[in-house]
Length: 47
Image (tube, rainbow, N blue to C red; front, side, top):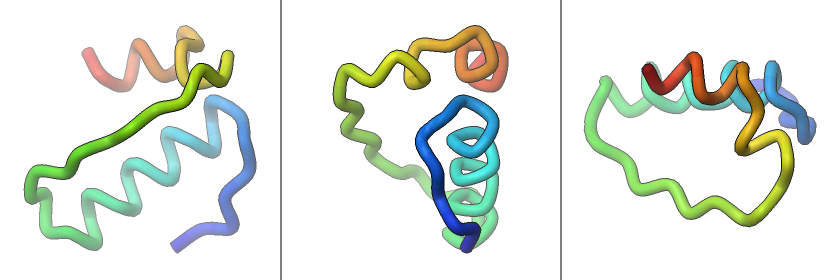
């Protein structure tokens, strides 16, 4: 796991690491209303 910080690029890295660690199994994310959760970088990752 990475040392998580609250911004778009670290969030994408965290998600990639999490999915790799969980062998690409489904996960449930519960987001708060942080701006970086709605950033363009996050939107691009989920597309």
